[in-house]
Length: 440
Image (cartoon, rainbow, N blue to C red):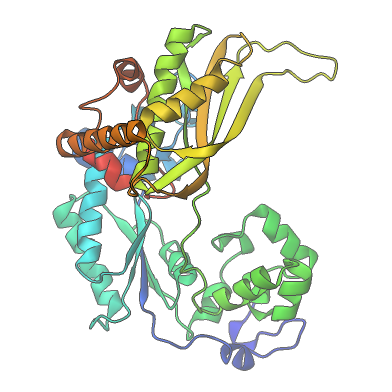
């Protein structure tokens, strides 16, 4: 066991010298993570499931996989991504449920309301995970606030709801702190206990350090988080990451300085669907495809963007094997247009052009995306009266659906797809969450 009080790296840096490079600001970032959120929400709403190993999946099928597992299931070794069959081999009494998005939307809204009552600077990383930036607020004892938030979750969401809370000077260390004592933990990382905290962890315990990066670090004789912390910026920039930006970013991130407070650029918008039945029928495929196009176009308008590029892909059943031994079971095509679009029908028309070029084979899955995204120009007056009327109609339809619920007014052909394609739970960005909630 490494003694953090007498630590030295290959560069012979003492713990005292190392500590002088840390951000000594009082921790002002709080990371909140609802424990096994989707499974726990199901247990909260159905008391008979409490204390039992359960999982949720988007659509129950023989080969479906666990997209979220309860705390009890995780303790038995059932993990996210594991197939239903594998989970039942570990635990014959394992219970699999289909996702129920309105419940999770409700939990998200309650969590957001609680978080925003402390600071206007709130960032949700996913439905069940977010952070509060307390800079500029009068709160000083963030640990006490953390316990208060736990109590409010019990009162507002239910007695079965638990969360991990991490508090630190930056987002990275706050997220790390939130995972130190699951479930229902609360930990603070500061310059005073940073070395001690790192001494108890492995490289892959650090957020963002998976197997590939840990191997790269170890190849450069950085075998532990403490050695990572003590590595100088030249080693990280020139040898480990071979990038000045990444190397310096990690050097600062590990020491508690904020480098992750930025907005990512949106490169594409799209959806995909594993078909409810395998088919090569144009009408059945187009009904599902039109719904995918419509929901993607809604996201496009919600983000105040237009799209020039469209891409379509299909996966096929029982693909023939060619001379190279690989089955040719996947097809995709794309096209970049000179003009951008944003209406449901224009997006569908462009995707349909690609669809009609497809190989005539049985399809098992279908997906599309919009790329070449540009800030919308539809607020500007167009000299094309026909286009202006179409744009105005689309805005009117959006307003009606926003008021009365998404798809209150929609295309008849898309209704079949809407009935069959279940709303998936977004595990990453919550960029479109308010749009999804408005459709309930």
